[in-house]
Image (tube, rainbow, N blue to C red):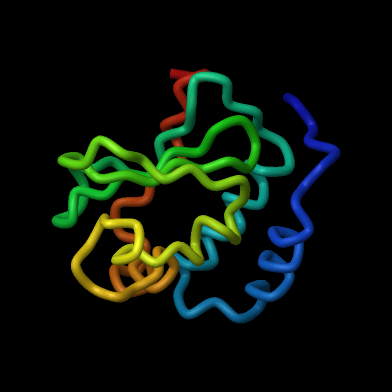
Length: 126
């Protein structure tokens, strides 16, 4: 198992801010598992967190290396790349062209109570 000696300050602050302030068990699971992955699990072949086939908006979320993320939509060629989870969750899905409504990825995930998020699709281990 790889150990990431570097985590973005923004993500450290995000994980601290969320701890104990979860709105649901699924939200707690999301942040606890993503924190563990960022700290300990390198992915070279990518880690699929949400498939476009598992939500009506056709959005997908992929983790790269330790803490980089790609967010896209099935029918849009241009993906959005982010350096850390904090930046990823702050992305406005209307501004990125992924949705027609003004909502951040964090709000979108909360709205669906993280339904469709997967934690066992690291292609390095499949």
